[in-house]
Amino acid sequence: MNKLNRTRAVPGGRLVGACSVLLAALLAGCSTLPTPFSADDQKQIAANDRKAATADVEPLAGQLTLADAIARAIKYNLDHRSRMMEEALAIGQLDLGRFDMLPKLVASAGYQWRDKDLVTNSKDSVTGLPSLANPYISSDRSHTLTDLALSWNVLDFGVSYYNSKQNADRVLIAAERRRKAMHNLIQEVRTAYWRAASAEKIEKDLRETIKLAESALADSRKIEQERIRDPLEALRYQRTVLENLRILESIQQELAAAKIELAALINLPPGTQFQLANPSATELKPAALPLPIEQMEDIAIARNADLREQFYNVRIAVAETKKSMLRMFPGISFNYSLKHDTNSYLIHNSWQEAGAQISWNLFTLLSAPTAMKYNESAEKLAEHRRMATQMAVLAQVHLARQQYENAYRLLDRADSIYTVDQRIFEHSKSREDAATKGRLDLIFSNTSAIVSLLRRYQALSQLYAASSRIQSTLGLEPEIASLNDTSLADLRRSVENAMDQWNRGEALKAPAAPQADTGGDSERAPAADAGKAADGPSPATAPLAASGYAWSNVTAAQPLGQTRTGAATLSIADLHERSMGQVKRAALAAIAPTTAP
Figure 1 (tube, rainbow, N blue to C red):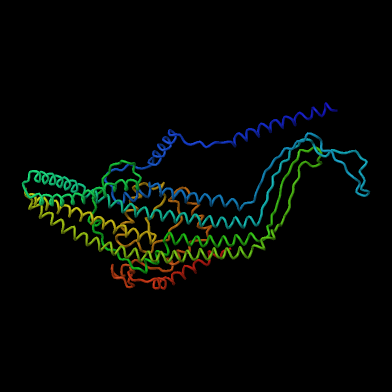
Figure 2: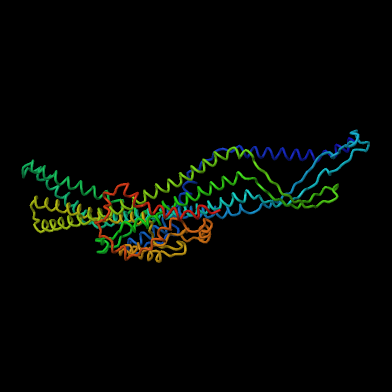
């Protein structure tokens, strides 16, 4: 008998030994040490990143226009592509969340082993005395158990449903953030482009004037050493030349990095040499745009990315309240399973089980008042943020319009000053002779002309920056389909059409509300489903759909610089009173999606 027990105990000893080896391996794996990257690894990773960053960038052929620069920035800028990836990631999260609403189907298998038989005694149920029968065995020493169980919890389904609605709104928020990133990118590209254009325009004259000034300075120092003229007069002459040189070199240093900044925005490889196209007369002297403030406010409320994001945040807060209230109800679960056991002592080795269960955490009733108060505060906070964002957007509309007016007047003034300085330079050049003072007049007038030209381009850059701020505040951008499926040439044409419509004043003609999109990647179809899961269109589109204004009304508005409300002196009270009707319309439009079950 002892020999038999020792023989049966051998498998158990092997199992203990195997478990010991496995435990030792796990402990060894847990004792990891920090391993920094080596210099060669970092160098290789950096090289691969640089190669991947410019792998799909189409080489630049010919001169770079403003439309080319904007199109390249939209298609190749790395920050913009990061926003597109964030939107695609949000869509992936939405797709994953949908599976949480399905029942749980769990397949399991197990193996049980014991070194001794499961021997049990029994007692008489009447007398309570031990049974006189021999102890019995009811289970094999080793057997396997398999199980396929289907379970569905109604409470978990409700929570997952509202989670899916929140994820759908987060997809739309990611789309709005991508739109905002595109607006900022276009604004930065415009500013950098005109800085680079001014650098190219004055580069040749700048070098020639610096060379002329250095030559005049050397001649003056030579005259001072030879004492041909009064030393004080020579020193004053040198002081004037040096001051002009300082101004010219400051301009040169300021514009030296303009092309580098532009190349970084459009993701050209570092060190790429390129030339900008000569600006057209229309670009150098753009026409004033009619900007009626009432239509601008309506468009901003319907399309501004920040405001639309706050609309979705309110809807997320409402869904969070419903989800929190749902957790306070009892949970009802339904179960069905197929089971099989290889235990030879069982009469039926395979069987089915089904059941229903209700469970309720009664302590949730104690926390219900606090939870309801917290959720109510969260909703009020989200609504307050939406209100604050709306008022800030309306103020930005007025401010952007005023900045555009100021920039246009500054451009007109800078153009007049440049014209005068250029005529002075022409006269000085015609009077140039070998005399030292004649050269000084030429240097001074040429420096003034260069500074005036620079200021003119700076004013032009500020005008286009103000125009971009208006477009960003109003939420206007080029209509772009899939970036992966759209070629750079087609994208450039889309940008040119959008710029042309804006310059003609047609961009404000009842623009459609932007839709959630991943920039045209393979996730566009789920983005459309996200809009459906979020209970239809955004409430922010209601004011635009209800207004029904046309471009004929816009062009018939007051001319630039003659606002009926006086944007420069508009008070907060006036602004609040003007926008209350729009706030009420947006609130009424938000009732249906925020109260949907």
